[in-house]
Image 1 (cartoon, rainbow, N blue to C red):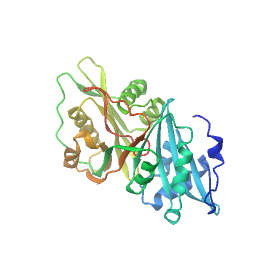
Image 2 (cartoon, rainbow, N blue to C red):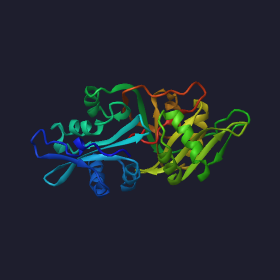
Image 3 (cartoon, rainbow, N blue to C red):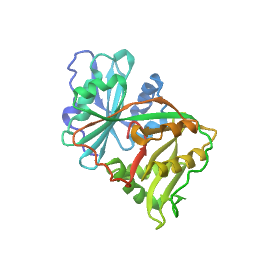
Image 4 (cartoon, helix red, strand yellow):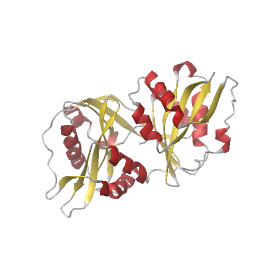
Length: 299
């Protein structure tokens, strides 16, 4: 990770309200988990540990207590994502979120920066130069078995192994538009099930993961060349987890929402996808496409 900017490490208490910012450390994770739990977000302590492994961030303190958090992830030299931007309700409306965002954005003027906005945060992000580019549909519930989805002739699913990390990272980078090799390798290591979609020439064309998260499991990321192939991956992973709580965050334009609900995963939220800076690269038709994100925090 690039070093934290000195101006952010010494973020001024400009509002004179007793709130100060400082860089976040591993020792803060229990406190930031408590913040997300206060808002009834589903993250477990292990989920915070997993995302912070690749992140840097800030916390806001007041009277010795952590009252807000914000994380950023650098992907290569020109991309970043922001997430887990939380302000305890007692401190909302005091520009704490604005100060955290200014600290996160310090040094990212030449980056494409992605985040997923709640309704409460969207206005702030727009004022800071973010533009709406889409929407994520959060679906969850008790996963059900569904009839297998037919693949193209000669295509099949195969289990992923540790040696597939580089292939998955290439597919993820093409689909997400950002290089996230170490992150994808960690996802592969931690996932309970990862399957790769291969074509008739045994070339990897997509993949999907089933991972522990929050109240149960999450399906994601899911990368595929088209919606039919994405359904195949999702149906397989949902069947693996049938009868258990399962979440998936799909792209609004994926045309999968109605089918996702048919396998027991109902829509519960729809955060806005926003970008500041140059547009994200888009895969050509039939190329690797991101149908389900890894998480709303990381993208």
